[in-house]
Length: 378
Image 1 (spheres, helix red, strand yellow):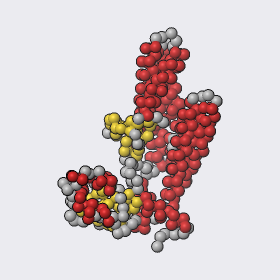
Image 2 (image 1 turned 180 degrees about the vertical axis):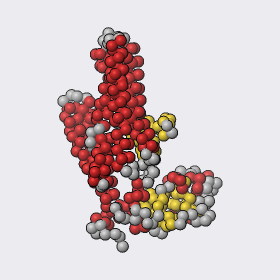
Image 3 (image 1 turned 180 degrees about the horizontal axis):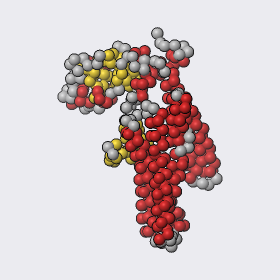
Image 4 (image 1 turned 120 degrees about the horizontal axis):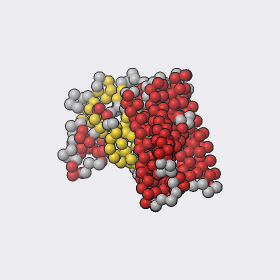
């Protein structure tokens, strides 16, 4: 996600934090210290409320992290690629590969809300215990607030609309019931659009009536509607590409370049005449060794281009999505690495690049199949 920086790793998965997280922590702490705690435990100093509120906000962010880590841990247990976990103002996001079965999709989706519900129940129980020992105490109030917040988070995320976890659960159940993954994606996406629109309307009405939190609800609804719409369009494209092989979709022949050339020679001899912004690289035997993006070449200072080889600024083969001409397009797209920077599949035959499939190729093919009623291209 743009605007985020890596702050560590959790169980081997990169943890990123968006710039909006500190803002959210301040807002949570402000509301907790100015309203919630004074109402529950009156008569204490401003310092106590401030310290307790800051601790509560940090604990809630830790709960959001636990929610996302549950997704990531389950995904890795189901042998899915997990790119990173990002915390931001709307909660969290775990970027991962697409599950290969309805069962795996269900387990990954439900793990996050279950973690929130468990944390919420444990916090409420602990808060009740603390209150029983010391009535109207700050720790008891904090634990109770944290418990209800996590329960609300878990229940909210189980609403049956993408991109919420409940939408993923609905997708998995429909996929399992009908065997049609694309249809399940479309239904969940439409549900997300409808629910997001309702949130926008209700949030705006609340804000117009003087309820500040209504603006937040409207923003959440807008995010849901936009994301669900993108997922629904992706499902439509997937349905249009069903049965199409990479050999039918690829642009060929594809311009390739030797990976041992210095950047200046590669630009003059290969990149200038190329039609694509991503170029496959080959080794001395003519086999694919990786890909290089033109923007990576331009990032090399002019005075160093004669000394830097193009393979030193390339994406290695291990991080490149490849496929054979006989492989189905949808299967290759499912293997795209999260955060790869757009659609890019290098088609290889016998280890040698014979074509490339980009987002433009996919768009052109989808439009062709719509015009011709689904007939394969000539």
